[in-house]
Length: 434
Image 1: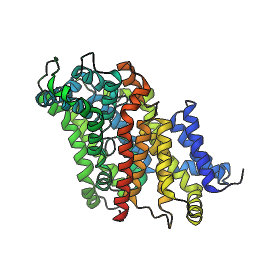
Image 2: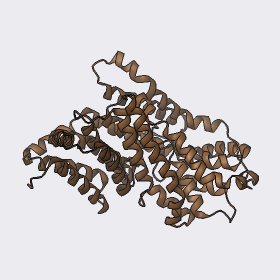
Image 3: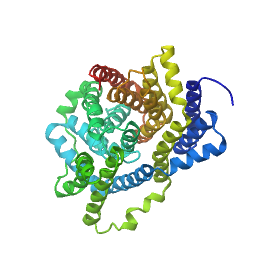
Image 4: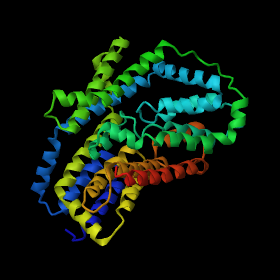
């Protein structure tokens, strides 16, 4: 094997994983191959690599992670059903009708963004079109509005796969994670308002949509209640489980709390809708997209284990510290690059976060957990938002028949604000030693 510094080996494998995704290799498979490559390049024999891979596959939290992800996929499928989606739309339309179309343009994509479903922006696009249905509204502007406000809560919303991955990799309590990233949501809303909506505020407030608002009633409560049960379980159950199951580590307690919440929520779904049998509930798991999600999430746990076994990171971190290289550039740059190239949140988290956590643990790195998470996630997420292959951008662009470059002109100022805010939040958390 070619002999070179450990950090170059890690970066070469990282770029190799990104290159594989560009050749349509599934993201999860690319991540696993990257972990195997790290072990092999670290000097491990093929037998040793297989042993490490087998140990990674036997991890209990890997299988709990896969179970949670499978339930999340099914929950998203239920929420996106027509009558359930109509209940969500009805509430946002009623609020928007009272306070003007400006609020409706924010609320409709935001509410849909609470549900972790693939290409969710395609579902909120017709709602945006109904609100601004006059011909004078540019399709690129409508695309930017729908796309930006669809991605307001994914930073910290606990049922998103990227949040599950991030919690697993950073070994952080859920409340700490939420505290580190929840400020991104109001700043994202503010940036979208200032650059996308405020220039058109007068027209939005003076002219009302001709589409009639639908009443929101009991159905919305029925749909949203399972979601609230899941969130409450994630936030409240871990301390209780620590008393009943003291032998579980913090990571497994968090995952068990989420698993219990998902089971309770899906139980409510089965009770609500008699047409949903257990067989029907899990019918979509054999689909290609669901399998890809499971593979991606599971591959992160496998990659992290293989990365630890390679023992490249401690050496690389020590060499970077001795050379005086600003590790903060890696913390921001690796997720940004991964987000740009893969176009998915689980891509930048799965590929870059295990490397970043390994660097963070090196003596002399000067990185604190919440500060590192804020910087890495903020830059990775903006990389994903600016990626030309992000599925939400592609489907929204197709729906409104808009051009890519004008869309970027609309969202680039918003993205610049978020990158700057990531740096500010990093500085604040680091100053307090968080």
